[in-house]
Image 1: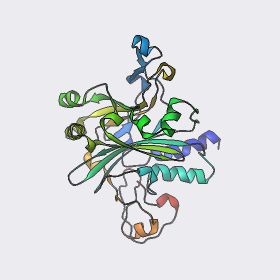
Image 2: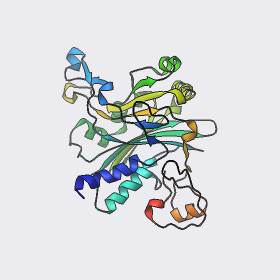
Image 3: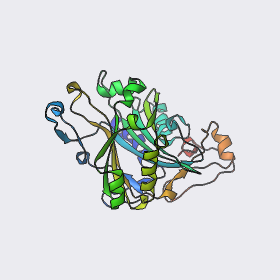
Image 4: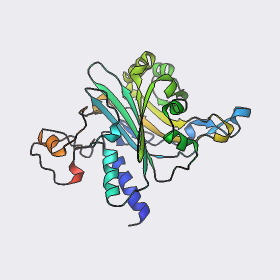
Length: 297
């Protein structure tokens, strides 16, 4: 097996697992897909002199997929949890001497609720080294003040009722660190950004309105580091994803406390995420036969 194929294997495992499946980008429902990059516009090489924007083109990182989660408390720093499926899969690959240069970028949109908290977690990965001194390198290794001034979300409503388009906005862009509380978690091979929607009453109201129509809404979401000088142009997207008319009931329940002992958790009636169509399976024996059957989401 070639090195490229081996690298691809762990990514494919992540893409094909999880509470939401990858679907057809044109007609899929209750899942996610990869939109074409050119649906977004970014700042071109002459933006500060001519105010010209260009099609966004190829992203820096490919999507690994998304998790739609619910819990009794806010889920913070999900990549550090031993039950996180993306990092668990990467750790297994690295234990076999594969994917040693992989870097994971994740955005965790935290949606507050009266009884349950929800998280939409988007995963991206690259095997290419981040060039030292580049804007992305400065963002990954910089301080929170720098990150807050640069982290931007773009959205495009693909399908949805007029009230969602009017309230959320179409082709909208927002510097997330300026509008909301963002918490940054950096590991040796990852960066996670937790975006607290509840830190803004207006944002919380808008998101909850949108969730009321969630089964009829498809939206493209992209993340980027904003360029603020000629030397940083043209802009490139970190990554993008299309969310297709998801069901609230598709959210996978996650214990808010990280799982520190897999055997104990399985023995106590923990969960295991199986391939879509097989659902969740309870465990009572406490027996773990191999690493792939650890309780991961």
